[in-house]
Amino acid sequence: MKVVVLGSGTSQGVPVIACNCEVCRSLDYRDQRLRVSVYIEVDGLNLVIDTGPDFRQQMLRAKIHRLDAVIFTHQHKDHTAGMDDLRSFHHRQESDIPIYARQSVLEQLKREFAYIFVDKELKYPGVLSVEEYPIENQVFNIRGVDILPVEGLHHRLPVFGFRIKDFSYLTDINYISEVELAKVKGTKHLILGALQRDPHISHYNLEQALEVIEQIKPEKAYLTHISHKMGLHASVERELPPNVFLAYDGLEILD
Image 1 (cartoon, one colour):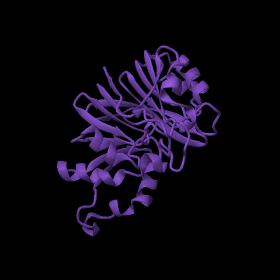
Image 2: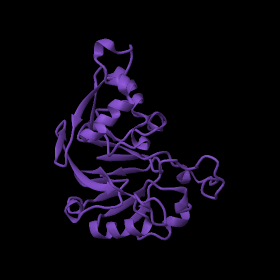
Image 3: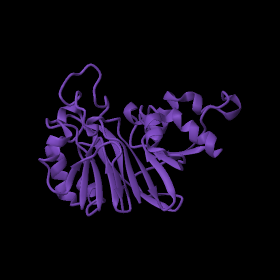
Image 4: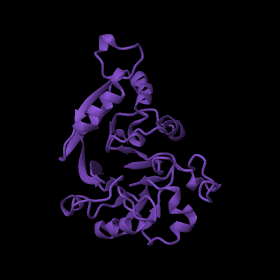
């Protein structure tokens, strides 16, 4: 398995427009954060979790030439806004792109990208075509690879994280039940959302994320969905436990 962190930033990215803080002025490439997404290669399957507004740039930067499926965690724009750019894969591969999401997320995608979901005979030439696969809180399979949803709350909004073999991805969460947490305990590699140091209404802060990591006990954990309010990458990482790291754009995790 190979996992590539395509984006590790929060909804505004880092640097933030019109901000002049030390993080937004940083020349460290690890402080330059596009919106969150990961690319995964496993058992011949190439998939992406979330297509945010930076999706095109992320695909070009990572030199990804094939995509077999997309999974969505939830419907917020920083996770869905780049879906239209899947059309490059649609045209290259000459096939509809499978998208997996809970039904409420698919319904919102249909509203926001209505032109994609119209009948094929009414479509504008060249528009993306997708195959919809509604998922619920139970294991689903893509081309022989089992994917386990892990449900949490993003304030009051239910969102999915996912476990694929010994890799787990949980972002945009500020509550997860013991039952759901048990699904990822002992995972080898964990990516977990941690927005900032101060408490937040819909995201784990740094302290809370470290508490969750202590419960899951992965070999290595990486924090993502990071705001400029977290601080400089180099400074924050020195404070973390030995098995915990800040994710950064372009990070590769190999297993």
